[in-house]
Image 1 (cartoon, rainbow, N blue to C red):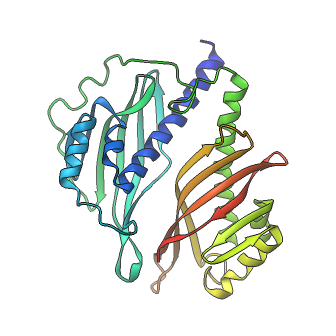
Image 2: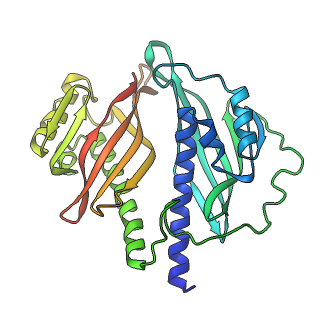
Image 3: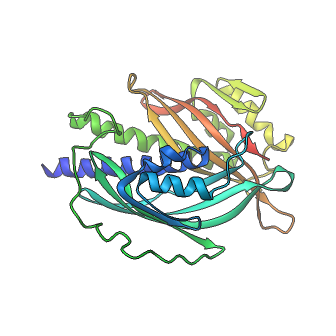
Length: 318
């Protein structure tokens, strides 16, 4: 393997592990504990405030027994994840990230109930990355975890390996240029998400509208705007209507949990989901969670730049 190939594969491995982490969050919040368990290696281990489990079936069984049954109706809690730090070493990797758990409070306001860290080790098993160990530390309020005897003791053992370089289940992309472009597209789309947040918080509505395609659409509640001029007009009216702060600095948007799907049939299209938090100044001047929602995005490459073709921004709490 050449140096370029090795470096490219390492980046692809990091991207696949990022997706693994988001699938964990997605299945957990969706109550799909069977799919959740299958994200772990054959001898994978999980420990947290809920208890300890080993193997996909064992972890699913433990959480099924100890987590409250999900009630019918709208989703009531969300896990929010920071961007992980991932270090890859061949068919093994380690990771560290911060998580928080937000639920519905009084008056349908979002309330952060727990905050902690995930300490991970990963293994490539049968050609796919899986969790080998995950420690779900709760830092606020602090909960002490005692690791069971033999925790992760085989973590240094050789693991079955297969060529990666693509999303799980995809055909390996042999062309280096195609593989590199895929990674660049994902990075540019993440940058688009951050640019959107920054210009919105600055109330730079001209720059905000320019992040949409020429015939882009923005859907916020019952309002729908199509085209850059209409989108700018919609968001410029939000401070006066109370949907945004009166001036920059009165409010702040936090975006987490990006899940990006590049269109396999069209290299200039993609779809994405994210979670957003709307934070305002409380009566005491301290930050206050006001709303929580999600973005459903259709993205398009227009004039060599990724833009929003359609962005929906429904609120889930608040």
